[in-house]
Length: 246
Picture 1 (cartoon, helix red, strand yellow):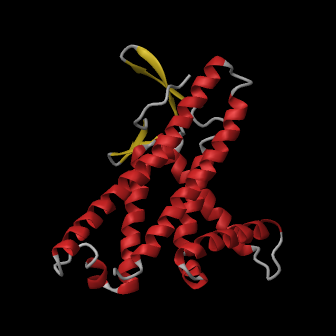
Picture 2 (picture 1 turned 120 degrees about the vertical axis):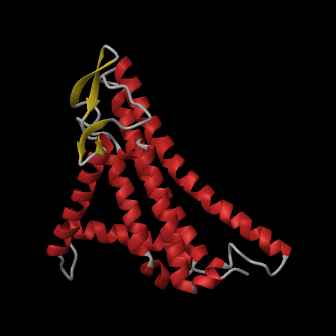
Picture 3 (picture 1 turned 30 degrees about the horizontal axis):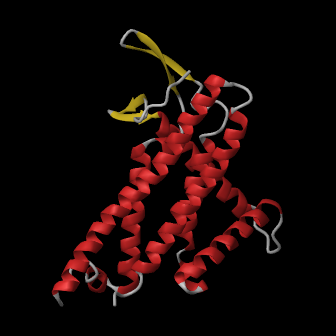
C-alpha cells in the first residue's frame, strides 16, 4: 500500500527536468479538457443537446453566480473564460485523483532497504507545487486584468500611494494581502486534497471494501466545493482589481 507523502514522487527525468506522478496526472487532465472542448466545439448546434446542453447549463450557472460579484452580466461574461478555466481545471484535477488505479498502480523501488510502492499517477492537488503554481498564476492574472481595466498607474496606486500616511499604510496592507492570497489559495486546496488522500488510505486499511465507498462520495463533493471556492475567490479578487480605489 502506498503511504501518501507531502512531496510528489519522481517517476522519470526529461533533459534533467524531474517528472513527478502529479505532473503526469496533470498532463492527462489537460489533454482530457482540451479533447473535451474540441469535441463539444465540433458538434456545436444552435439548439443545444446532450453534452453541449450540459456544459451550456454549467456555464450559465457560473455566469449567474459571478454576475453578483462583478455587478453586471457584461463583466461576468468578459471574465468568464478565466474563471471557468480555473473551475474546470481544479474540478477535474480533483476528480481524476479518485479514479481507480490512481495512487495504487505503480512501481516498487528500494528506499533504505525497504521496498516502497511509487504510484505512476497521483492527484495534482496533493502536491504543494501544483497548488502554489496555480495560486501564483491566479494572483498574477488578477493584477494583469486590473491593469488592463483601469490602467497601470491607477492599479499601482492601490499599493503605492503617497497622498497621505493612511493611504501609504493601506497600500502596504494591500501588498501584504496579495502575498496572503497566494498562501491562502495554495494551502487551502493542498490541505483539503492531501487530507482526503490520507483519509482514503486509512479507510482502505481498516475496512478495504465498505468504508472507502461513502468516503469516495464525500471526496467527490469536496473536490467540487474546492473548485467552486477557488473560482469564486478568483472572481471576487478580479472584481476588486478592476475597480478604482476610493
